[in-house]
Length: 447
Image 1 (cartoon, rainbow, N blue to C red):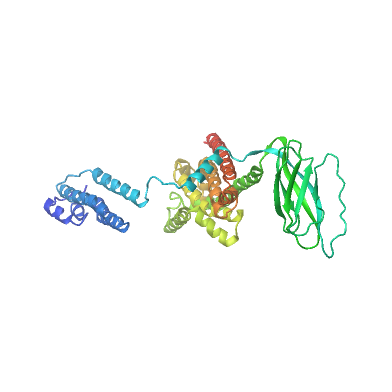
Image 2 (image 1 turned 135 degrees about the horizontal axis):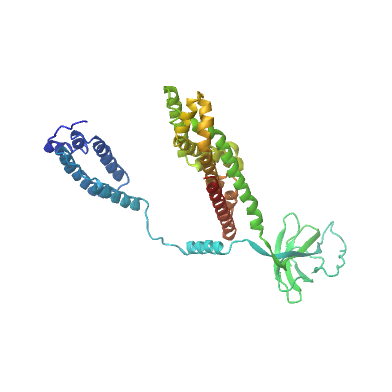
């Protein structure tokens, strides 16, 4: 038993003018080192972010430090709760100031966008009324050298939409009247001038009988024949899946598979490395201890770098697409899953290990017959959990070009298509909830 020699409380207090020195003098080394480096670091942080006035309450901790050192010299150990609370409050205030938390002053445009986002979430583009496009085409001629002398009109098909253009010959700038019938009643449509540079020249609305009359100014000047087409999107009854959902669903499946293959690739490396990163298996010789340290360092580095950073690097290396997302998830997963596996190995019961070793088994046999059977259930649970996490992360790395539904989502958002974006968001939420439930059931069965 170590006997601590008495110290002079006055000297301890004077030394604590430099925070922590008095505690060290009194034998409280851990508290002294914490104060010696912690308080100056706190002051430097506050000074660095421009909150010099917050250094004043830190002075209260400095004063407490002198009082604590004097008490420690007399053999009394005071609670550090008050000092910790003061520093916590100081850092909360600093966080509030640095992050500039305030009530937002929204402009009219921002309020409109927020309203559109909320509206999109309430009414996602999931289903649409079944429709059919109705079209009819008419021809006219721009007179001049090389233009047809006469125009042959197409006969009308019974029960089909029909339009006619008048006059049949029209130079540039002439007004052309288009009449149509046989279309769906009370529907909006448009007149489109066909050609390499197809343009919309007019819009129209059919009456209760499916007829319309509209005119446009001829923009063509090169002699020849031209075609104007009337188009209507008419409802035909019933509902069908929206085009947005048809586009997003395959992307969501791609995301799930992306997460699955990323998880599988990470296991290929994390599984063997986890045994090398388990302290209880790697503490026999200095070489094993060195290997343990290197493997744990690898896990730490790969786990500490955000998966989005890996995704950006992968996109630069292999291009935009799911493969970049797979690489990002796999690399990050090696560190995350490897650590979980290693800790599972370190927490096993040592009784079976000693029993197997007593039979004369070598190290590999000990691992196979004593370690693996104990960790298989935890490995399966961790793997399912990681796949669950990877599905969420796969949606995010898609925002930087890593493929999957995240890539589709960022396109909708860039185009301000909030209903379509809401469809992707709800699809992501639904798949994640299903996977949460499925993985929980599986982990319960194998637990």
